[in-house]
Amino acid sequence: MKKRTSPASRSTRIAQPEPGYHHGELQEALIAASEAILAEQGAEGFTLREAARRAGVSPAAPSHHFGNAQGLLTEVAIRGYDALAGVLREAASGKEGAREKLHAQGLAYVDFALRHPGRFQMMFANKRLVADDARLRQASRAAGQAFEVVVAELVGGRPKEARTAAAAAWSTVHGFAKLALEEKFGSVKNEGRREVMMTLNQVLDYLWPARGARC
Amino acid sequence: MKKRTSPASRSTRIAQPEPGYHHGELQEALIAASEAILAEQGAEGFTLREAARRAGVSPAAPSHHFGNAQGLLTEVAIRGYDALAGVLREAASGKEGAREKLHAQGLAYVDFALRHPGRFQMMFANKRLVADDARLRQASRAAGQAFEVVVAELVGGRPKEARTAAAAAWSTVHGFAKLALEEKFGSVKNEGRREVMMTLNQVLDYLWPARGARC
DNA sequence: GATCCATCTGAACAGTGTTAAGATAGATAC
DNA sequence: GTATCTATCTTAACACTGTTCAGATGGATC
Image (tube, rainbow over all chains, first blue to last red; front, side):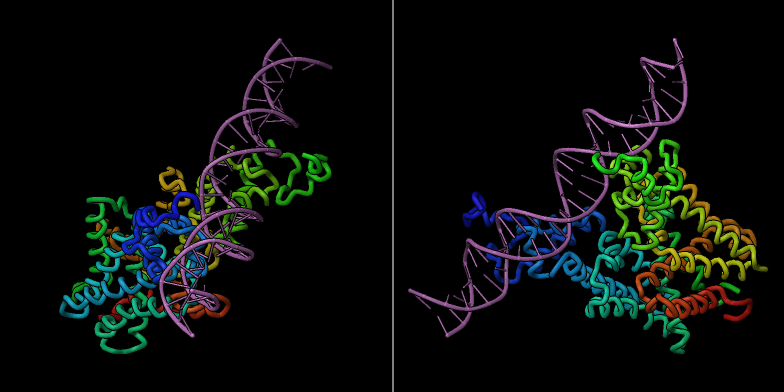
């Protein structure tokens, strides 16, 4: 503490809209910093120290708010699931008919994954999260249920079949997103993305065909 | 170099069947050590130093054979894809009829992932591998094509539709495996695994129904 | 105005991957 | 049979990482 103690230098800290901490702003600053790292560097690029650096605090500061790196990432993942659930609900709300809603949700799911790869990968990196955190599990379940409500409409309400169909839908779009992110369907940068999304369109048409199109 | 120089102490090194290195055995020892770590600790538990430790060499030794950690893991991933491709081909060969073959492949794929989670996760952790390694890409493509040959039979040879159907099949089983590993379908330990595999069975039946079962 | 207490810092620790220079020893050449 | 060559491995160091703990800091409370 030789050069950074004066109020003037303090206010130059990055990602600190209000000059004073001690007011619960550090949590938000750390979460925002983490999301920025994930967006720029991907899930593997995240480090707790870098998040602290961007928030303008020492490496030990985050521990007082989140316990450890897993705690911070868990909070980031929760927000990610909330965002995903919102995207899925909105996609369904803009369509008429169960098949069209499911179709739109599938596209929205993969679009979310390709637009926010770091965040998406981290959401499903259980080992880096507090996997049994109650709020995390709830947020994850809520996102999964976005499929279930649409699928229930598709299969006509039978709960057993709805569970199976929801698992099928989630598996398909999740697997497609993961494989696309690992470039198994070719590049996903720039115009490569459009092509990958068209492949997804065909996959969804193949698995959930328009009434009477298959068989 | 004070205590470990005598031939006697040298021979006590772990995972070193033949006492003499200098014969190309270190590559195999490092790969075997890495696979053991992945099996015991999962993908996140792998460290290059631990692999070197198990092979009985210094932390710098692997660099002479694999360049860096990514190089070693790439070799591990290649063997993983080879094993997976073998499993998929064998699963198909034991069945009659395209749908039954695809069904068996799906079960085999997820079974492979649940039995070797660390290896499986690492195979799809592009950031930890030399993603553009020619042999890795070839091994990955070979595994993916195990689906294509069966799916081509299913759709009757039309190549465009076969590509789509293969992407659909791979996506579904890959997504199911990933979600299962992240415990999204409940526990996957012990008898929980049987239940998860039954869910997969229902998913496959739902997406690729027996002739005339749906519609 | 003194005390309290949440918050944050500084410094340390054990661990990581990677690099460069040097030791070692099997293979080759004379 | 001895000397040289060359692949292989070690030692030591560097810049990182996450986490812990004693102590400084300063806003809120009495």
